[in-house]
Image (cartoon, rainbow, N blue to C red; front, side, top):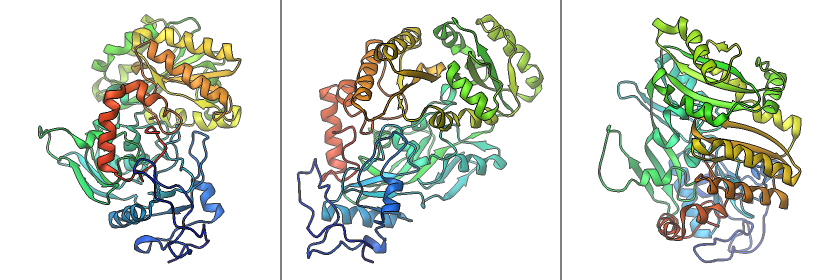
Length: 474
């Protein structure tokens, strides 16, 4: 099938392997390129407007969208793109916050949302094999009747995909106890930039067979390969997961709170979240969460055996009072009720404050209060609005500066925030990845020698540089 609209009459220029051509689609004889393997290249302005951006606010200029349905489709697509020197940008739900799925000019967006099946659930071995376009929450709902669950649940879990989560090593509320996505993907199939299929990882409980390529693919943002299948480790659903909501009085040290809760994993604590007063007010208005105006709030998830379920609220009320939170603690019988409400924060803030820089840094817990003070000083110095929420138990802060996210001031705020985090022995990205908006942090975070080694792996996996160019590699 031919493209439905002509995108240019020249052959794409051939450039060096590090910088693939980003011109519009064209054919050797001046006509549009034929789509690979019978896949239609969708080029209408309506379609392209759906995939030229992500949740970061950044925008690109794709030439087409293509929607593979099978691994064979992806292989054919990559081989076609390599032959014609056309960049490919893998895309899940577009919920990434640092421009990971924003296409360079002329790129073809590979929309994986139609590869969304649960292929197999092996209950006796505690794993599920899924396609990359499966929405995280859909998997959780399918596992619920089986008494199983998949711990990673990013704030966007009702729309973000497993493939996108794996590509950015996403975390989420329960990462306090369970860790990020990287800890839960045990095997994957993926198509390299050469068009070759690799299967990496193992279904056995442990393996020591040299360096682990799977770990390198996870978090690589589609620049090494395109996932076509992921096998995920599961755990039995806890007997009961309750949510707790506690008001945080002004002046309470968040660092003290975070350090005090560190040892509570032993007591079944699986999530430790914090929202500031402004975010809390938005959640109160938009979801009805029982939050008090002018107060920040602590949101907890606790896994408890049934035999002590009735005493959990009393026990945690006493514990939180000991940490300086004297007010009554709210109880949610099902913690997912709390996380569904908390997950709406981004959408509610979009409506209330509009575009903003949505950042993501982390520091050791001992540096937490200095990070908060530094972020507040940064906002005051640049005279911009600020609101914050955090995975408090891990020292992971999401400061939101109310400013055009692609403006010069936004770039300056990002850079100064990263420098603040680095000065406190932290990181410029705790869970959102780097994408195009944080490309400048890559060398600073890893160091030149490590980046050279990583670039060598990139060159091996994607010798022509067609996979998601313009991201953290530059």
